[in-house]
Image 1 (cartoon, rainbow, N blue to C red):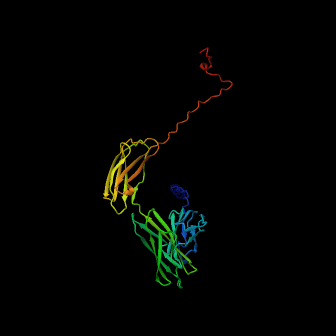
Image 2 (cartoon, helix red, strand yellow; image 1 turned 90 degrees about the horizontal axis):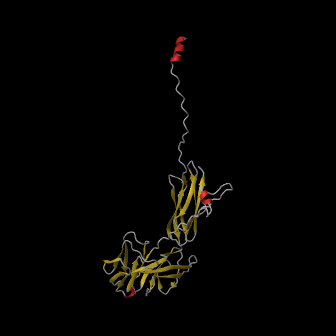
Length: 367
């Protein structure tokens, strides 16, 4: 028994019990968005028919999923009232509508969804398919770029294809602008056509626009229309067209570069580059003789235009329509300093038991 008692006394004390460990979240991933179908293929629809689809998603995470934005790629695609907050394990929806009018052939539209899913804060959805038109017109905008000083006709072609089984007939094209004419040619009777649109000189305006229309025998597309657009290059283009300097006086020297481009067929000669203010150096270079010119206006440190005035750069040209090319030079107004309003002297009211200091209490006679 003594041995047993000795053994018990010699045994080491039991180890202190460790504090229970804090619970650790296993597999915590936060909010997570997962779409059942991120790409919707609507197949084939007739042009003008709306395409509607609702994208369904699930919050497969373990925290509240918050959608902050749903942004379609263009105005033809709109988003309806979408789910903004979705609990873990729950589903949400994003209704989308695509307006197929004015589209033809294969199309692909995207919608960007932004959420608090850290793994994929931005995800793209797609709507794709084929827009079917009874009668297809390509292109619907017939654009022509006309060089400066052009005095001859400029033409472009438009292709018309009948996608229906029954043949169609087209009337002679009509233009609502005398600057354009149009002529119809039949490639395959009732099926394939070509319209030649011609822009007629003189080209005196920067651009011309007209509408070409054709009547058809089809009730599905009784009228076809094409927009004709002619961009006329200006004979002489100055960039920038005006110069704006920082408020003066300039803290440092400043060089402003001008580019003068001659788009006419005849080479141009520039002479006597000047600016009507003192202290500014002007240099003229000709990278492409007769066609392109560069002008450097070197304003000195401390340069300042008188308030309310402006300067002007000018250079003479041998082009009679642009005998003198001018670029106005202005300077930003100085920021107006707002004076700090004078603070009024505080008036300290006297309590009934408080007397003035001795010096202040003296009468004028005592002073």
